[in-house]
Length: 373
Ligand code: NDP
Ligand code: GDR
Image (cartoon, rainbow, N blue to C red; front, side, top):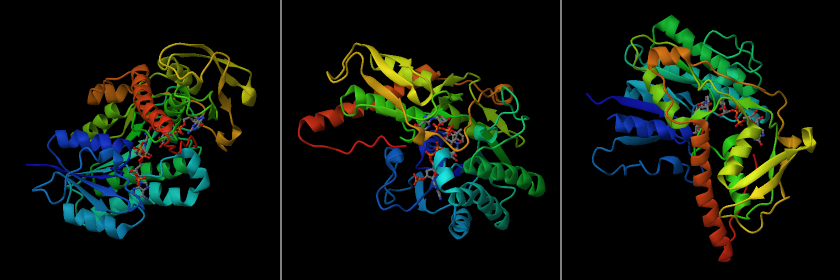
């Protein structure tokens, strides 16, 4: 029997990898996409099938996590075996700007889906995955963080996700729904949104290396994160829903690095040796040496990284380090890609696109290069 899955957030980083993964497993995959004034399906265009084709296995529905009427209608129509709730206003810094919207989508959105499952009597059929996050640990109470570590959220995003975490547990305990929280630590890829720190770095430095931009402006580069690859992490989202009993799992690598280190690795991939000097907001990243296929604009002594306090957050999560022991033991969790390999992959992809930009510019076509975050 073909299994059916519904993915909210299918147009996002994880949604696109998960859709690919489930299609390969033979699933019929349904995704909810938001109406936008421009096309917003770039990450899934390569797997998209013309709805006029016979029996397409990927189907998209317009919808929004703030609209329970469409969520209920889509669930009633599809009656999915599995729901992956990946949709979210997922940017921590933005959640300070739009706290109420973030709560509506990230907290009440999860409730709307769970209520729809209950209302439609799908409690015994539909398994539910909630995209929970290491941001729940916020001001960390224990190192490393595991499933039993107390939460201390530090942003409107994290507080909204705390509600979603507990409502998922509550519906599991109250109504017997097979519902799981994946407490995923940061995971990245060439498909990562351009305003998250890793992609901002790989994209920004690739642009600098191609002479398209002079400098990368960063926030707190002392921040420590446990970074993995999104492709490895979506595999675990699926694994969680294949267990006999629903449970919550931390997914992490168990290794931690600073944002500054990630900047240095990315520069090294581009043939730039970068030295940091100064302190606090005066800290700068200076080019110590250059080799490889670099635009002549980048030379020794150039300052290509500066700190801009605009990127500091009202409350910061300084350090995150996960303990994936439970996932290792129960799900056989083995990440395939190291953070350095991931960084190399991201730089390679961003460099390709920066080269295209440069070529267009050399031929008189100027595209906007936004390095905002
Ligand atoms: P992205 O920001 O790349 O994707 C978010 C998705 O949610 C997009 O498809 C977006 O649509 C959609 N979305 C946003 N608002 C709404 C809404 N109101 N209604 C319906 N859909 C909406 O995030 P990721 O793929 O990186 O993350 C997936 C999930 O995992 C998120 O819930 C995130 O909070 C969580 N998470 C992510 C981690 C990470 O490191 N990546 C770690 C832990 C948890 P559109 O394309 O139109 O913007
Ligand atoms: P995070 O990811 O907040 O951990 O949330 P992000 O990549 O945005 O920030 C990581 C750390 O880097 C610091 N930082 C900067 N961040 C951004 N975006 N831009 C900058 O210029 C910059 N300079 C330094 C941040 O302060 C932070 O400490 C991500 C999201 O995917 C969430 O949805 C998810 O839940 C968590 O990861 C786990």
